[in-house]
Image: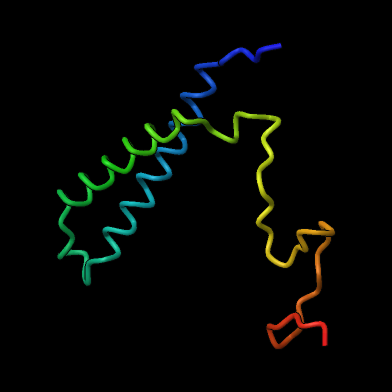
Length: 98
């Protein structure tokens, strides 16, 4: 059975993703200035707006948070991919088995 596309859910998820991208871009551009007075606000606005537009366009390809059956890779640090169990990390930072 074909799954029905829910535009309202998509626009909400894509909008949240785009807003996060806009905020992250603004923080990155503002953070590249030495002092707050040196911030080029036109550059911040244009870079952030462009990032938001690109995020929305990329969302057309699909949003994993809307696909209940998506096999999203688990990126938890310290988790063994083969056994799906967490391995203790040794105090030295290494996790060698020797």
